[in-house]
Length: 156
Image (cartoon, rainbow, N blue to C red):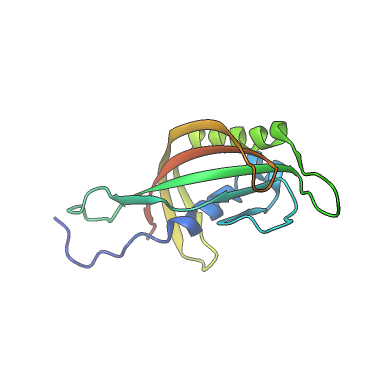
């Protein structure tokens, strides 16, 4: 039974970004262009993500472990503007989504240091929605999505 002094797990968005920036298959494609939203006219390819929900796994455990649902968008192509039409690059957007899928599928039991030097422990990822192409009419860019759950906690 929990002792009543459990600290909530760290921000899932911070943990996920730290994880993604330390996965070579992902950074080989998008470098450090990983954020919670797509800046207008950002250099591409670009990966966005956010925490869409989740819950503690066992509230009576000695360690507070959480599952976070994280939808991921992988953009690629060329922005429109100055009289130019946008140019989607579906192949590169798919490659980025596939790199995320591969890295998440292969991940388990990883301690990771966050930007504030605290540590998180990722137990595993589960792919809950496979790679899907989305017709992105607002930006005209190539877009593929994938959703995962990340099971994690503070690492003490």
